[in-house]
Image 1 (cartoon, helix red, strand yellow):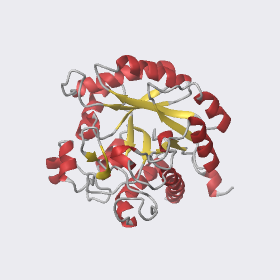
Image 2 (cartoon, rainbow, N blue to C red):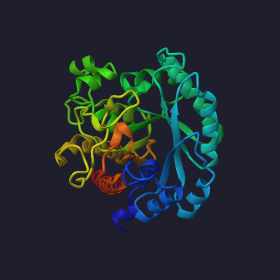
Image 3 (tube, one colour):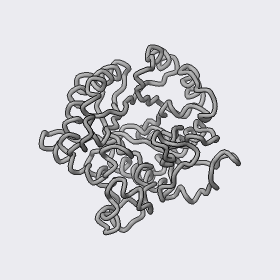
Image 4 (spheres, rainbow, N blue to C red):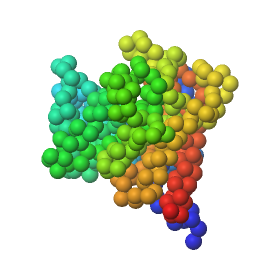
Amino acid sequence: MTLQNTLPTLPIGINIDGVLEHDGLPWPTPAERFARVAASGAFAYIEKNFNPAEDFGPYPELAAQHGLPMQVMGGIYMAGRDERRLAEEILLAGRLGAQVFNMQLFARHADGHALSDQEVANQFLMAMDRGLVHGCLPSFEVHIDMWSEDFRRIERVAALLARQNVVLRLTLDHSHLIYKIGSPQELDAGGMAEDVAAGRLTLAPDAASEPVYAMWLREGWVAHAHARSVQTSGRPNPLMQRGDGRPGRGVQYPLVRPPEGSYHQPWDEAELRPWKQAVQQLLAFKARHPACPVSQISCEFIPFADYGGGARYSIFDQNVACAHWLREAWQAACTAAQAA
């Protein structure tokens, strides 16, 4: 039996928003997207964010036709406004076969006040109650513009949930951490600059002290992961503006060299090292600890202002390249774990 045949399974999927060339072209239909994902042979499942205006009627048939289950679904929610929609979408996600409900929760309530840690925990408990009924468990994404942009809060919310005998479930997207390294402005966005400067909080994968995401893995909180390469220093995306008129936050850096003129800055493979090392640490942990609840990884190169909006390289090709790199890195991690 070959090593490849004995490797533990770690399914790699794709956020279907990333199945396009770029946002300067018409958006593909769901049928076109499923067909392209299937033809690539690179992905085991689909991740999909809910759009209240979208008709999900075609999705079950497309998923069955192409052998691409809707394994992860989710959306962006605001406390005090979206509780009913959240409940309805967890129900629909369960009916569509999703097992993970990836949640982004805004840092502020609909009435404008900043959510307390207890209010964040309450939102998770509500989603967990619904998810247990429908077979689709929530996972809070560590994400810019959300409650979790202050990474220090995660441990506090986990402690509050533990008092209810509930384990926090996180979606770890290293890009939202790594791109803040070396950027006082981006660290200040989460109120963390002082702690990072004092060494009380570590983001860098090669630092002498343990990066904060390693603790999340060790505690068993990371249940899902996204993969999107990024560079450090929080460089903005000048090609597209956010809704407030500022440039996008630039949480995406091509994994493979983009065609000349398709990206707004020179591309340097060396910029990828911190992100790659961080993802390799996740894979190594999973290989050494099979009970780690990370059960799949979604490639998530996407358009939109904070990511690849306005660029003209192929976003889908970057996702395919990421899937191939993840498989190679996973095999290396498993080989190392078996040899240890």
